[in-house]
Image (cartoon, rainbow, N blue to C red; front, side, top):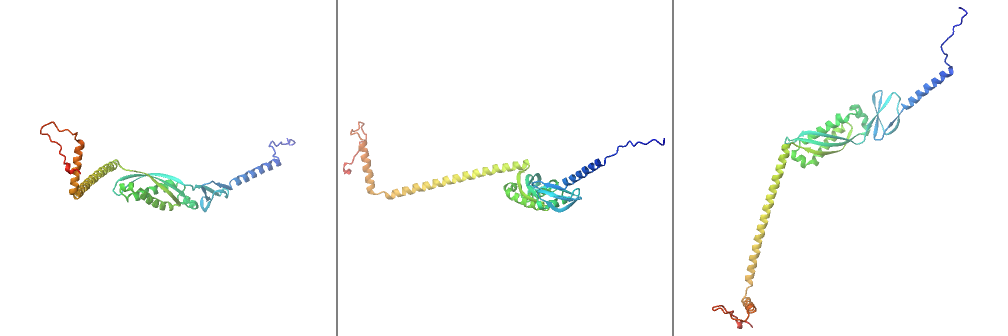
Length: 279
């Protein structure tokens, strides 16, 4: 038994094979490090740099950037114009319930997205924008009556925009534009407005009718004055010569109409012609 040789059944690894495997592992690590060393910030975005979870005071612009692998992380934040639409219910100055639908266009301040992320995060619409819209609308709506909200809509929009812009600026956002698309009121108020419009139309019609009657009356008075003045002038122009002329004209007209025969009826009138008057 002492002369028997113990045969090692474990396969011996070739030294060359081991080196090859090590090279592949190292190469894989290098590739992995290379892939994690660069980041691309897409168009319309900015990059927020986190280093071991802490927000760095730098903002990456669009394009390719280097970052420390496994140490730094880049969070993209969109800086294009975004839209938020909200429906808010508030009370007017005359205590009417008003439901307002408003559309808001805004964008993140590109240079301050890191601060926004640090203070608010990326859920800024739900946390900041929507509540700010409601607060601004309620504050402005309370300054106007329900009818003024309709008749002074441009003025209301300007005031809402001013207040909302200030609130968003506190969180590094920029307000671009607002559009109040609709004011909704209660059915009772809508009926009251409709009745008021009908009454105003009737009053306007009555006023126009009165003006028409007054104008017609004035026209008749002026016409009567003109006729009276015409008669007065005609009387002033009547002279003895004009009277004689009218007589002659009447006699000439009678001659034209007479057929030269005397009437057969007794007692009938015979046209009398003053021959001496005709010269």
